[in-house]
Structures are given as C-alpha cells and as structure tokens.
Image 1 (cartoon, rainbow, N blue to C red):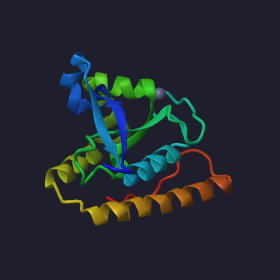
Image 2 (cartoon, rainbow, N blue to C red):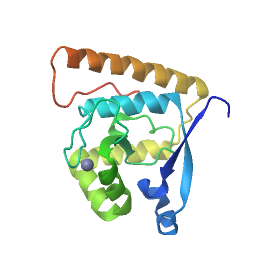
Image 3 (cartoon, protein in one colour):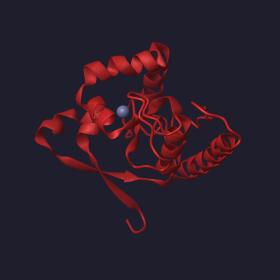
Length: 165
Ligand SMILES: [Zn+2]
C-alpha cells in the first residue's frame, strides 16, 4: 500500500452502492494515477464547469468531481470518456441519491445509443492489466497537456479529448 493514495468517497456517490447510503457507510476507493489524470481531463473537458448546474470552478478544485455513469469497478470502462461527467459535490450527491432521475438525465446528455454501448462494453469484462493502467495514465497526462494548450490558445467551452477505452 506504500505510496498508494486512498480517498474516502461517500458511498452514496456511486449508484451501485445505494443500499449503503441509508446505512451511512463510507467506503474507501483506491485512486490510481490513471484516475487522477483521467479525472483532470474530464474536468478540463467541461472547462471546470459542473455539467448539471453550470457552476464554474477554479482549475484543480476538489469541489468539482469526476462522476461515473457506470461504476469505477468496471475497469474496462473506468477510463472511458463517455462514462464520466464533471459534477459539483451537490450534483454528484443528487446523481447518486436519485437513480431514477439521474439515469434519465444522463441519458438525455449522452443519448440512449452511447449508454447502450457503454453497457455492452461493461459486459465484455475485458481485462485491464497493470501495464495498461500505466499506459492509460500516460495517455491522459498527454491529453491533458493538449487540452491546456488549446485553452492557452484561447479555446473556451467544452473541449473533447481522445478516450483511451
Ligand atoms: Zn452542479
């Protein structure tokens, strides 16, 4: 465990852990270098803006989260651009606590086709190796540099990045 960061995430933020929400149980999710780089890309993509309420955050703010449509535990879509949105703390809480509403909301944003593709990919359960994880981290660090470069050149609003998965 040395050197590996642990972050406590309120279990209610992940729809798969809903049964625990009522019990108020906190769970530890191990945050990997690939998660950190991916999360920054997702938040930079939206220009550090919550994709639900539109509130804007300072760069690198921890008030804006990288929210997953399907849980991080599905490693073959954990680092897929379509499987994540930038959400502020309260919208992320809403997302996890209201699965019927948030499911409809995310469908409206992504479209049923993208949700279906994500579900198919999830069900394939393709293995993601340790080496893949290193490649994913490297890929998103490079994508982040490209996004920042485009910001420096004056591009505003949403910017797309190349998804590794
Ligand atoms: Zn919000």
